[in-house]
Amino acid sequence: HMGHAEYAAGGVDFSSGVSSPFTSVEQVLDFDPENAIGEPDHATTIRRFEAHYRDQVADFGDAVRLTGIYTTCVSGLIDLFGWDWLLLAAGTDPERFGRLTLRYNRWIRHFFEALADADVPVVMIHDDIVWSSGPFINPAWYRECVFPGYREHFGLLRESGKKILYTSDADYSMFVDDIAACGVHGF
Image 1 (cartoon, rainbow, N blue to C red):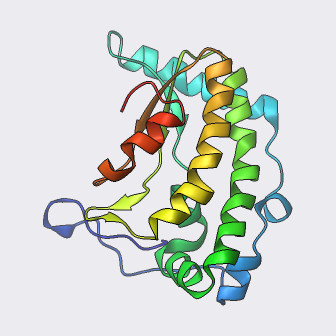
Image 2: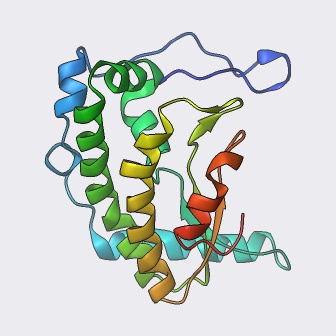
């Protein structure tokens, strides 16, 4: 219940029950996922990606089958903190928020290493980096903190022979060239 805008017809998905384990901007800015969450088990993570891929093959026979990750960077931060804390932290101390983003990128690398080692040919990267009107944080933050992580993580996937498809909700057109330069094969 991190909070979200309504998107289903008639707003039937809207929930006002927003909750968070965080109670201050300082807690958000000091958060270290490696220490708080720990390192996921590599073999278990690989098995989960491969099982998801096999389910896709079984369910969608002649379609492009894939597995992937939704908490790539920005969506992961939204998931951890919720919109209110994320935006408050980013606006309160952009420099520390940038360091937090880099810590998250180091932690999420574990999942990209597992995707690289998984026996799957196509990976979907989903990261909700924008709102319908475009970026919700200064574009410099994306270029300094988000896209360098993409280049590193997508490089792991490319080196393992994966095809990478990228998606984000809303209008990310101003970043298409940045994302393409990170190594995706399609949007």
